[in-house]
Image (tube, rainbow, N blue to C red; front, side, top):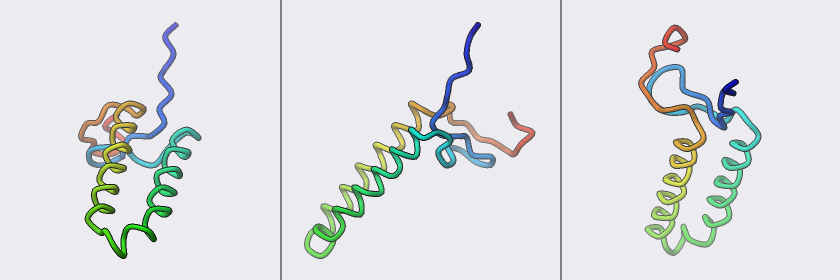
Length: 83
């Protein structure tokens, strides 16, 4: 009756957090963030490195929030036997 939720990101095998994307939604988000970083770098890095670092921190925070919302609940894992 209850369907298992489709996660965009898988859980890491060891440690805390998420691994690489497991669905096309996650890959699109990851590629968009990489594109946003790449496009802004030539304009901000040579002149405004601190603004670029704040921009990177904001994009990382967005990625972590998306992983938290669209991935399995984060917890510490010790390998395959810890499911």
